[in-house]
Image (cartoon, rainbow, N blue to C red; front, side, top):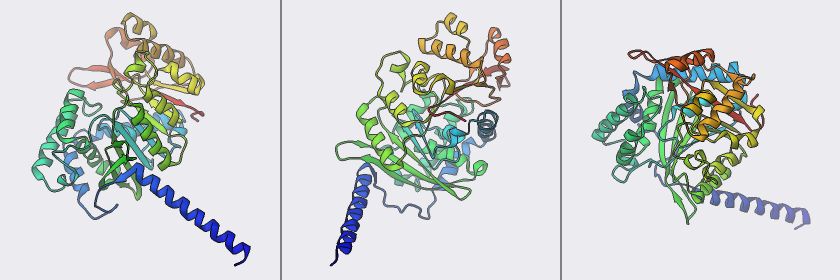
Length: 392
């Protein structure tokens, strides 16, 4: 055997061993325990549409958020970098799938992180396709959450937690996807357990494979303690091994629980470090990362504000938290620059009722509209987008 042949054989063996090691590492981190194949012929889409049937009355209004985000954020503000990432990370997600899909409907994958369980011991994954009474009861629970929370614009914790404890988050997520079957041509192909497991630590989760207009994508939900540094480190390892990317678009909305320590100024917060380390773009409302922590990360010139928020004076006089006042100060400073943009009827973040004194200010900023026709309640919304490497 000549020297070239030996070198070729040795090189081939090294490549094979490397590939095997990568596969082994991947299996140790993302471990699929389901017996089903990746895309079998099954009736998961029927289950999703059944669970989503209770949302049919609200879908036209909710789907407007997809159009409004594209029109006001991507097109008018020309922030195309928001959708340059292939993946979306959504910490403190609960069962909300609408928001990440609205921000980036063309991503290849979405990772939702929440402390709520995705499944319960009473109703494991295989029961959802064959237990009709379970499906009916869960559909009613989904309807109660959507009906009681401004037509699904946010999820009320006192309704969400009991549902999560009884059924898990799976029915709410599947219901939202099923409700988008007609509006976005989304078809649920398969649902499988997909845990993060490296032998010493274990985080339960599922993966939902979907297709939209012949484009395949997946949604992964992982249940964990968002204040646990070891758990977040395990998720970060899994993400970096699987995606092989250095950054992603991170969505934050209604995240007081996850960022409680940060909002109150008690650092370090493992969730803060986790997000800033993985993200290239952050889309958030006032409940997310405090702006004093984002500015060193991306620079104030790369922060864009949308809609309306309380003025600094209103926040101080209303004795709001330090983080709210800080948010108001930065929002005011961005509002005076070309980095402020109107947001039309886009209902992102905590949309607040505008009292008589605030209506003039909100109207000037061009960001108020009516949610409740019965009470004629004026509501204004806000949104912040921060880009580590520029948003254009």
